[in-house]
Image (cartoon, rainbow, N blue to C red; front, top):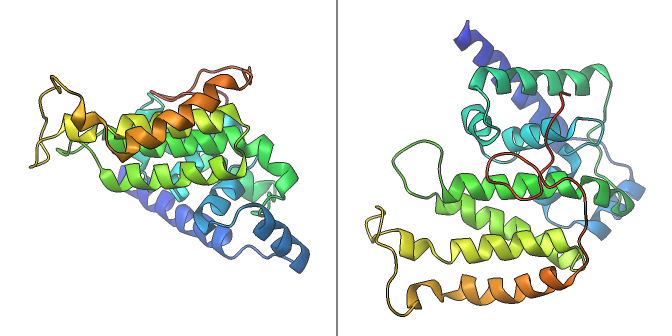
Length: 239
């Protein structure tokens, strides 16, 4: 039963990814999308974070389709059992299919309503990289690097958004301490002592300036609760 459910879920994932990658666009839509988000992966993340889905559902589905996380990893991020998360993903995909929700690249004016979910996706990718939920590796640098890369893109687009700048600063500063957490072989390392040289790398030097404007900008307000270890991601509700 479990194996069959996983096979069906994987097949649905493949169909959803195909719909995202081959969504039809007219020339006007194509021009609009190029004017807003140039990065292909970030553009797909904005596309997948559709406001017709419940906030938690859009984050979980995007992590599964585009974030490189397994259902088990997403379930741990949301502190729910894996079968529960699998059911939520199936319901989200069923809602998209049954309601005929199009995978259409949002226009620039539509980006703000999807931004919070996009930031949640980026941060949870980073979280899984910084503190993997399974396996014997202390960190997954590939996920951390991709999350930081994705975080820099909206920061360039929306430098006046405090949540965007705050997320980028957080990821840079946390990732800057990776060498202090690990030994050369990748195992757990001792806490740094004495001069904080191991924490003063490029990530620290880039993170501090990013944090300063975030702290000086107005409080965006809203409910700040979210999934495991995340700053502003949306939660709650079913698709």
